[in-house]
Length: 164
Image (cartoon, rainbow, N blue to C red; front, side, top):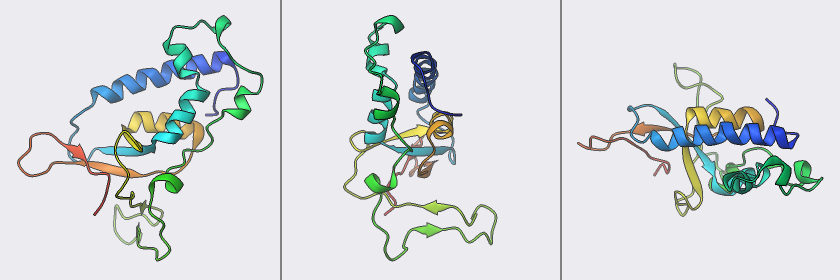
């Protein structure tokens, strides 16, 4: 599904994004093993600028939107770029690659190590599958997949982004 090409497309995409974002915020404690995805905060900010997020949030009508003719090329966020911003350099190929020899270890699966100095909300956000699929189908990019886990006797689950 391509990204928006007109103000009408932007508004439609904004409404879908906003709905999925609200759903994502409501999904706090997920079952153990549920998937979650890491998205670079810088990319998400570029996406929201492209989407005219702040103007739509402020209730600006389509007729009153401030959109320059070059908006769709100049502000397009490009592919979701997590690797350059969040992940450690991997010259020794220490990241984990699947062997395709067992179920669940597909050869194309890569587990990327997020740099230790990166922090949630400042450098990245964790989103659920529906929101990730919505963005990935439109923009493509680098997938950093994580899973919900339960630590100790805690009732709630969480996502461990950094793998030590």
